[in-house]
Length: 262
Image (cartoon, rainbow, N blue to C red; front, side, top):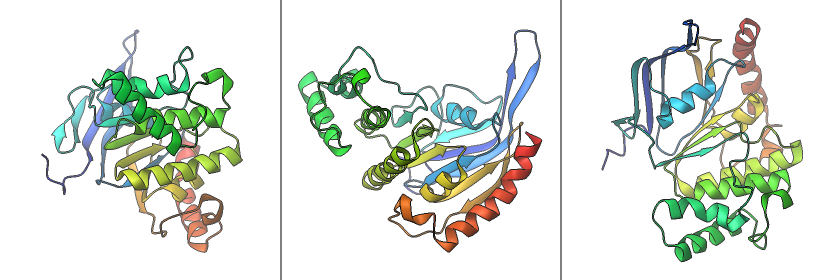
């Protein structure tokens, strides 16, 4: 068992360089350092193409740093960690499986018996508001409902760390607000750590305990903002608070310069 005071995620002086087929080198991250405490909700914002998704891939072990160190729960990242859940921008659900079979797939892959896996899946579908839709197929669901399936798929495996790569960007504003509230409720109940990548600065401030602003590529951490807004938060209301507006103005001043460079 690792020390509970150890950060859930640590990246120390990480550089990540890619070599193209013609031999040219591209540096995605340079001297990049960040940490995420256990139970903390961290949002990452930065210019398009600066390396936000690369950061998530390094945490999962899908990529290895060229230099520097990446640790999860105090241990060096070495391959895919089953304690990590990932929610993608696009739905990662099987179109040929119904809803309950999609959600039960994760527990079954991890060794659960089918009956137990479906019991867990049914409970998580209830939690995300999809009770009664167990036998529907993805093409029969709205975008918001498919995103609920994705959340159930992830939370059913009890992840200690949740990585999210612009998960709500394709949704309309009303559905997006509802899904943000759902996420906050699920996260509060789970006690896990979240790293949430988004282009939406207001979304980052409204959801997170801290917002990390990245520089233009090659990305490094430009600034870290602690978001001292009371919880629980209601997404449709928090944007109107004076403190929220103050954070938005301050962080945008930092981010705007990097967007122009990018």
